[in-house]
Length: 232
Image (tube, rainbow, N blue to C red):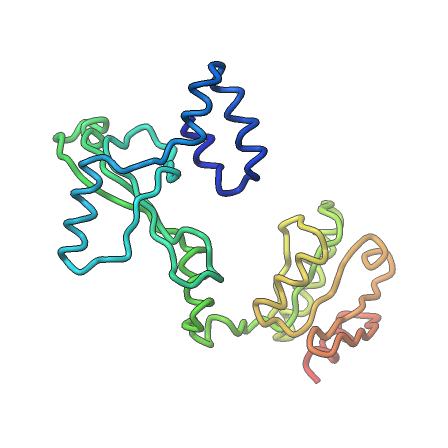
């Protein structure tokens, strides 16, 4: 039931009801589950009132928040950006009275949370707070590998080394993602040029250098020609 509640916001009403029917064999119990107005416990009500008394009023009870860790012993929570353009939870945590005891330390009731580096960046980007030095990469050229093949990676590395010797800052995308995703990632990082490298490029030694700002592609027949394009 908890796992189903955790997925509820990402499901249609029909899918939610279908999955719930697999759990509740009794029709009355199913109806009660689907139609019950979830209300907070006295403990949660008291917590929310305490927060309100201390000036923290942007708190609401949500029975659908499920944090899938067995060590929680009380309430759990997640914190969200108030900007609807950034819907992911920034960080979350909860109460754990027995966690330290599990690791052989003194048993101390505690509340803690974990934050995500990616979600922090999402927040900074949403509110235009990310420093320019972070958003504008110093990398001039991104080598995007078309196929995650050892020979192609080796060829990309060889080209990168030849360019770096001449002072060109180069990155190699080894993620194995689709070429379009690799190029979009380079664009987000502010890298002005990309080269898509596959078997054809490795065999011929010729590369198409794409200017992401203008979408212009220039063929370069050697590493030196690539240098000439990206440093002009």
